Image (cartoon, rainbow, N blue to C red; front, side, top):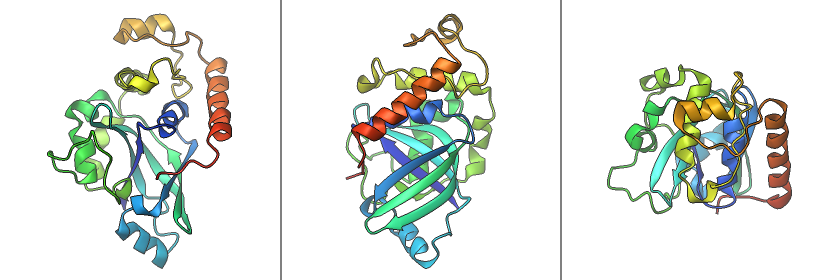
Length: 223
């Protein structure tokens, strides 16, 4: 089964983005949703078999209410999905970041969620639309994840820097195995990075962001 998991532009969920974009392929990331935001069909399947979604392929979307758009962030695979009372916990193994073509016109995000073109993305999504079954076949866009990893990362970061609340938030490059410097980033895409250092500092920065997030927002939930 192919799935879609959505994170958003409201605080504190916005600060998931530096983590999602910096963790290398194969690392674990977690979401949690109140049941009202999960598709009824998935809740029913979990009730019948708690392991039914394991190994499912997931596309992670970013919903910006401020700019009214849906962007594909990266693909992932389900490790576990667990329900405790009114909360669903989703553990993911992160995969690749797509090339820029997948977010051209943002049609893929809409189609994956099954949203009509007339749906106003400047408003919040309806209940059941933050974690649900993918309405697209994964093979229809799989080629977009096969490009050069670092170039895909840079293109997505450039797009995301248009978000008002991300101004000044560093995007660390530990996702990329290739060394990136301020100079070659600006040469490629004209992007202004918060830091020119890479490698160890990038990893340290990622860890600091994760610790700060857990201290500042220990009980984050979609409400």
